[in-house]
Length: 273
Image (cartoon, rainbow, N blue to C red; front, side, top):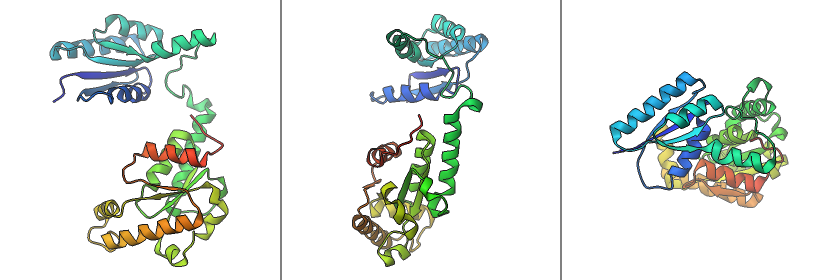
């Protein structure tokens, strides 16, 4: 059971504080209760947050750990002066020294996009997500030339979550195509993909794991049978070898690891951060 609480406080969504904080906490073999406090953007909300943090510390008998990304100086002051937890101020740790080194003041924006109505990067990201949804599982052959990345592989090998992650995280237009028995009979890539070979990356998966995943969707079907999964994976990998397509197995890799490998191999010209 967890006997210590971690708070992630921000005057925005808190995603940055939570992501960074969890990356740090992952270095320690301990279970902690996590609480995100987003949109702490007024002095009143800051005082409420301080009371919650301090009360938690009194109940648990241990200082809560508090990760903050606070751009509002008044809110930041309330938290730093009133909080009795272990405070880890990411803006103070990283932004302030960079201001000194670069000789310029930061924008002190709240969150990744302070005004989405004026952010071209945000609109590009939304466009990439819509594109990836429209080109999921080979739904559309239209405008494939606009794809930054095209993922191929058997059904349920991880193409859809990876393409959406690339769109959401990096603003890339990612298409994905399932390799099906008709493709294996032809012993070649779907014709629509051939002109875009340089953008193609293949995903494969352990047949046993694939069978488990497919059985969750269609139990006791030929589609999910271990023998069928073995045949499809073998045919898909043979096809990718013949076509000279770069590929990896998703069996034991996270979406983040898969995406990072794809970016290293494909190296698309356009990336949004």
